[in-house]
Image (cartoon, rainbow, N blue to C red; front, side, top):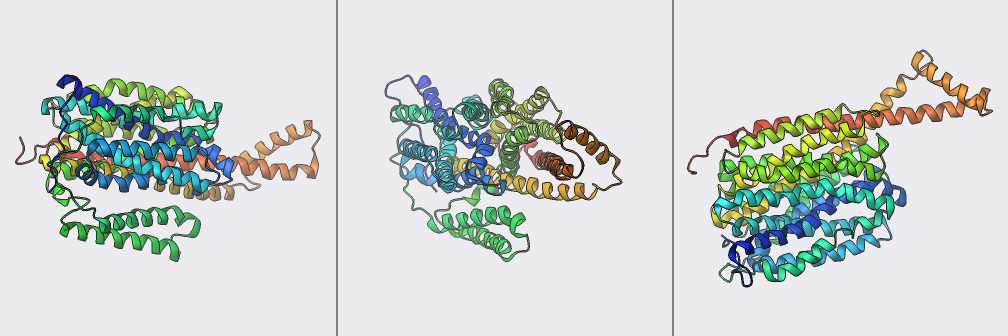
Length: 519
């Protein structure tokens, strides 16, 4: 087992102030990296146009980031014990900065994805590290409020990221979304030199479990590769089937190795705690729903509702402002009641919000969408601190670094899979709905005939009559069918998320009960 990470002794500030500056430092770095995870989503339509790619490739800007984030989270305990929080934090910030510059100057889409993968790896290392430092810096009675404030950087970052990203895309160009957040990591790096704790000299150094790491990379890579190519190549194709089988075999080998390894990436002893095990499962669904819907929302707003990039980003702003109020309240609440109750409330609120998005159409106005989005994000504001506190307080101190890394890992596994699955659902259901709608466009369809009649009248005013209108009919009708099929596909995607959160509510019920052996 690794030794617990202990906060360094302050040298230039009173103990109370030191704790808050330490949290502010890691939150600033965290906010800069997390914001980048969703700022790029608002630029996806522009990137598709710039490089001439479809959504089947464009989603790798998001899923590549999340996949790298997922794997690097498993290295949290190893970095903390071998290099300490200060060195690890500063290193992650500097590499993230270099990757951001690479993304801005990328000459091809492949380089854009590489930059996003490197950014994701740094963000994944930072999230559980920041959680561990915050948790261990504060005393038990202070952790509820501290973790509530800490959660702002995890959830509010993705909420306000698209707003800033939309302004940048419309006024400066999509490339600048890569470097827009750099002031935050750079300031955090300077503060970390003084306020982030150095390595505990009593911590036991551990060897990196390369075999387990490679097995996890193979698992995540094979799974996402299979999911992303299933629609294009066919789900029964040798390539897709092979990718999924390799992912399954690697996952089984990973679990087997972790059970017998002296330096596990995922300490399976964590799951002997019923509270932690239930929290991890809920965290998986939380990640899939939150990041998946955050990926869909800007694209839905721009392609279905016709919003500009700025307007699509502004749609998330009321939700971010609401969370500024909710997080401290939620952090305090989790110290007063069992974690399961705020989690159940939050999951229900998000499920209702997403279900309402599934009913939205071309004519749904901006404020209606913003209202339902705000309800969902308020719900998630109750979920995050409750999951963090509820899971980590059930562990021994020496398991906290592993617990923080694994909890974030499960959330990001859900995020990576959720983004991929929702991209596949939208792509597949668009094609399916388009086929079904096309089959209804016959000479007996009175609605279609009336529409084409109005089109003929407009074309006649422009001097186009008779046989010359046939091509215009086909082009216009094809565009209408595709637009409606795309809208219906997004409805299916949002409904899938709502159902998943309904299932998560059932999984969260054990968190409302006291675990045997805990206080």
